[in-house]
Image 1 (tube, helix red, strand yellow):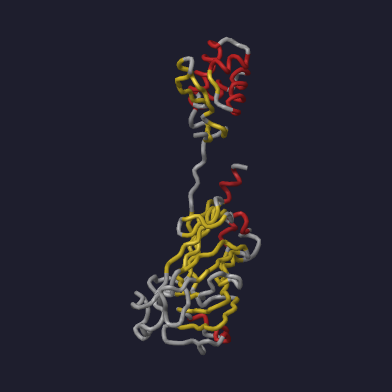
Image 2 (spheres, helix red, strand yellow):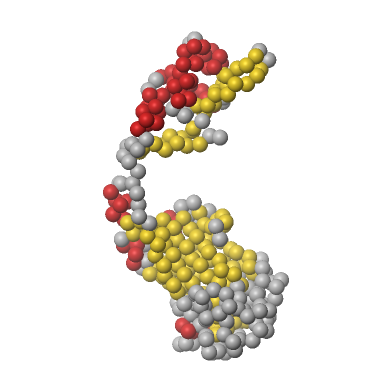
Length: 316
């Protein structure tokens, strides 16, 4: 399997072997030819117009440097030594690897603390005492008490939250993660009720999760006693994680969106939008749970794993 090798001054013996292997014109030419295709010792000698013994000795040096592999194969004329590249990329750092201290920064956000929303019926909000405003009335989402919400739902629309990015003055984010409990929104509750729930960060769409159900039939672990069993009671806790490899949902690849595409320092906040696209295949609505409803004692949680900016500046 062709792969890459990374070297630094913490591996002096291996570094010296590689340096020796690359310090010869004939060995460089062997690597160039093997980059095209695997070749036998005899074929290499014929292409280079040198004795077989010369090629054999130079291949041994490349093998010791872990740049080339050789395998004996049986052919029409007997056994031949077939050579191929073992590495196709080589990275050398002229220094010892730096050790960075990773800092994990958590910001919890109550689900009622949205700054922008569009909520189309069916819709509503509940706090720990009862309904906020009137159900199926979008104006209830602008009620002064909306910040107390512990459960909110709508059939179409979105809610948007803004998190502080002050930590990015001193730290550089390596990963960004949002977690929240959610499910579809059906009349009462329904097992077979898929809904396409989409997430955006700083206006960039991360991807869509198809929730299979509006969950009910048993009391959520943190749902209040006064909330009857006829309605939605719990959801699934989903984790949306973004780094330079892309976006993952519950550790499974979701999209190719990278952390650098989110421009986390371009605004005085980090925005998170959760909603149902107008062109969604499954427009099954959403229930969003706070710490006082559902199976998990949390609202929305943002996590950033960061390193000190001072450390990154020292390497530039």
